[in-house]
Length: 327
Ligand code: NAI
Image (cartoon, rainbow, N blue to C red; front, side):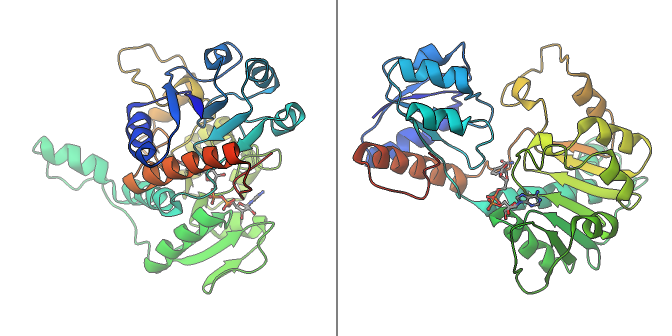
């Protein structure tokens, strides 16, 4: 299938071309993100491939449809960026990669926890400058602490397994999951908020989870709590997080995702003026760690994403059914 790949980075090209040796698709790699202004670039392409910050809204879908696109393949798990009802109405088939490497994201969440706690990022810089002092590097033992998981799906479960290895007490809130694995206790949201020493977000972004972590939730949390978000930026109310950091209520914040990340992430802005006041404020806190949506970024995950995406294109061409189809 001829496919326009939006928001292309060098690694997308590398892994898609490598995996395509076993398939037979034709890729047009495009750097711009997909939106109503750029949709015209996919003219003549039956397929369109998108990532997390492409805007696949009703207007964009209409333009794609008018120009011959009937298949959209997401090279990610979350699908909050796509208006599925509009796609369905236009007869556009949408596929995603529901699972590629939950461990990749879970391990990144743990990496953020460990960095924030033991301050290895600061120690690294200090030692390079010949500063061997331990002042202000004190951390805490994870062993015996309570970690709360929001969303006990694939990534939440992988994260739970790792935290059990650290000797943590693991509690989780998930409105859908009825049975948790051994040593993971399902609790309600209020209990999770009030008892966890560390909270890690692993639920999808939707109407119910938008700003799920807000001022009221911060008020419930323990003073000095650690919060990690590797899921989607808008699950966390950034303004409320900044206020909680200022008041010392939030002791540590690790985010791999950010509400306004579509204007920042996946590009080098080191020589540009950053106009996003909220990210600048977050960057000013020494107890905040920001990574630019790299939870998925492992060799294993990139290979799996490319393989499943190309299989989804095969399925679209042949009409065979697959559990990866959203519409
Ligand atoms: P999943 O679908 O396996 O699990 C999500 C879980 O969240 C489900 O068990 C669901 O019942 C639960 N959930 C739904 N509403 C909830 C609520 N209101 N409160 C608590 N739990 C709720 O999804 P998976 O694969 O574990 O991925 C989770 C999220 O991680 C994705 O939606 C995506 O946004 C994010 N993600 C981030 C990546 C990164 O690079 N940072 C990469 C891949 C996914």
